[in-house]
Image (cartoon, rainbow, N blue to C red):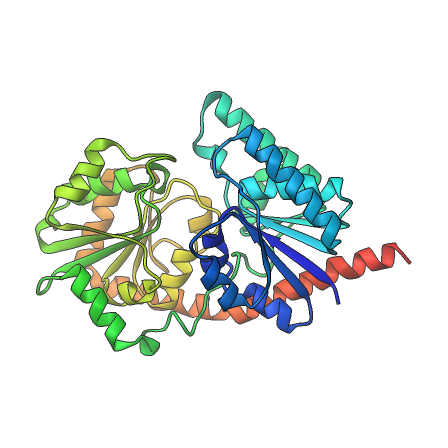
Amino acid sequence: MPKLIRITTVPLFLKLLLKGQMKFMKSAGWEVLMVSAEGKEWDQVKKQEGCPYEVVPFTRQITPFQDLRCLWQLYKLFKRENPDIVHSHTPKAGLLAMVAGRLAAVPIRVHTLAGLPYQVAEGSRRKLMVWMEKFTYRAATEVWANAGSLRDQIVSEGLVEREKVKVVGHGSSNGVDLEAFNRYNLKENNLVAATMRIVPGENEFVMLVVGRLVKDKGIEDLIEAFLASKIVNKSKLVLLGSFEQDLNPLSRQTINRINDHPRIVQLEWTDHVACYMAIADLLIHPSHREGFPNVLLEAGAMCCPIICSDIPGNREIVTHKKTGLVYPVNDHRALTEAIEFAYVKRVEMLSYAENLNREVSEKYDRKLFQQQLLQEYYRVWDKELSRNV
């Protein structure tokens, strides 16, 4: 039985973005161990996946002494468990897991790339983050980018050799659950609860944003665009996500606008995202950087019209005026125009959403993705076995 260790910085990533993968691999006959920092999500993750786990105290910031402690802990874990494959996600866990895996002589070391944080960093911090990415790829035996645009970027910037990088299936880190993100499968009590939290007025145009409320997710652009639009008094903007002021914080002015404006509703994270997409007339994704955004796949599965920024990850999913509206990134005036267009041209927006729904159903079904992922595990495992014959 081959042994696989899956590693992320925080357990929330296992709970949401990799949901069901570990359980699927276990059902396929693999021995799976999950590794992440401590977090309130662990009980649910263990129940959800049915696999054992180990806690390693990763941080999401640059903490040299703590990072060295985690590196040593991972090394000891790998020597004890003797896995066939170590597979990491997120920058910090990736760097430490790939280096520890190499030191411990783990034969197959895979890192999934889902975004490039250095794109929004500057100066010495940017240089350090670029070095960290390059060192991660060097220590890995393969890098699995979750988008073709990410693969092309890290190769063109000289961070890794092209033959070391692969995209699983059509992209993404886990596809989309077409049963959970289906309007006809939603529970009425969850829909009612979501509606009560939003409290939409009669004929009010509901716009939804899903994700962390930080600067590089385009939240400041969005607030500017919304407040400048001609439909501000006929609509409601719902921000489904938490403020993260310790990393990439929003300005105090933006936070005050969010908290004080009567037509902006900020809600903490919920597991019932599909219910909010069912209620919304429009999903807006104004991010400044993305790998392969799951929220666009989920909105596509829900047949919810989309406006998104013109960045590589978004463009791989949404085509302008075919499957949604795409506007120039960081341009709040263009976003205002797109919002007003979506309000007036609702029939056209629904036709775009239907086109995207067909594409998502054909290419990004989670069941299909997990089969493709399993095939990749067998590929690298068989390759390693043949090398040792």
